[in-house]
Image (cartoon, rainbow, N blue to C red; front, top):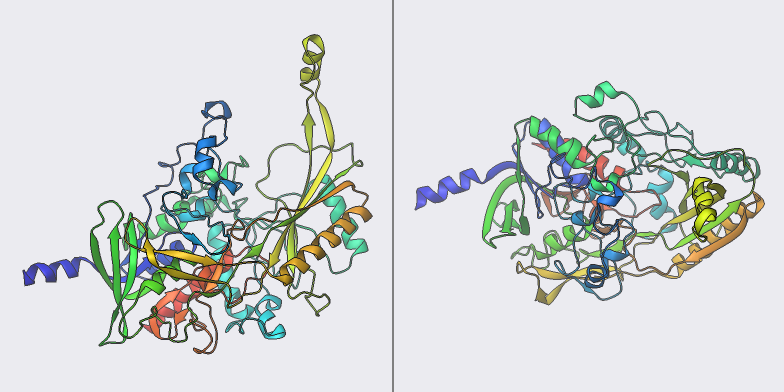
Length: 565
């Protein structure tokens, strides 16, 4: 029996374990395996292999039973995920259903999850903007949250490292508040977007309209062919899984690359219960895993652990990793684990029409849009709220067909469609301030089907968010009106936090172990062979889409870990 136990432990021992196979977990796996470490990736969901497991990717609209819509009974059973814009018939199989993975909402929170190989990297919006020092220095300037232990120069080379592999389409815009990167050819702004860009540049100094920077391959085809990926085909069916690998996902890029090294072991249906702590050595020694199908438990061992389960699940795993040394969760000496959770404020939008430029139309599809970088409180505090917001901006013309008549009139209408007016729209992407009152915690009584405590979520907006929404609507409406746009409409949809799908924090980075959980290398202050490099590590949220920063942090942390030995 002793020999069997020794053999079992040997078979289950690796150089490194990565918990989660999504955006940042895929990068941790790629970097670790490239550096020669035998690496186990634990994914709680099912296996999804690139090419093989995209069942809807080539279906035509009429081949869907419900023509793309989610049936009413499924929507009724899943009220949270049904509010997500991407939860459609062609991609519903990549989303976690409410009924299968419950959680407790102490305050309304729409938690959108994807449990499968690649996680939500199959579903993301693919926008990738770098942070600048205006973002990293935000907490130090206004005193809310704690100071980031890194600055732009610490992450800049890792942004470049990630961008070159991912493939990022964009322009070098020369903006100090949105640093340029390693770009492939940019996509084009439409005629009305170009008009608005010129108008804003002339009339609103310090404000800019640019084409989005997106993780789509638009050039250097020979390099990406080595990854087995091809140029973006502009199908705009990305949420189905891309058979061309034209946009970046863990499934199409980092995980296959890691597999080629021969150093990767993938374990699906592996629900991580906790990280195991060695009281004698004062370090983590492995991970306790529950098989999602059989409910059997297994221990896996490694000297190095990367936690990339997605922000809220990473908090859950650490909170559930208790020991004599850490009775309140691994690394939680200061009692701040699970606190200071933040998100992006997407509640507001502005739309309008434009009667000019009738000589132009839009054709084809573009998996991208315009972007308005943050312009509030950048160089100085100028408003009654802290931090700021970025915004999306897009404009296009649609073909209008009148179906209201019958007979010959209907036939003529169908055969002679008319171009409608230019329609423009913007949506807000606001920074929220991390607060101790915004937290996640383990429910002391309720458990899921695998015996894991349910996560309780208590996250909300505050007056800063309300003031920011008001300012965004006022400023964008003013710019639209000044540019000659008509029929301006504003909205505040009052959505709960979570639909932005950018939850961050709970295991924040910082200088001081008394006020943070992680150091500047993403190591737990109190258990330094455990690294956290997903959204849980974020000290503040800024306004940019966060995935590029997660990936850069993961690559940087692996480099540090390997050099430390």
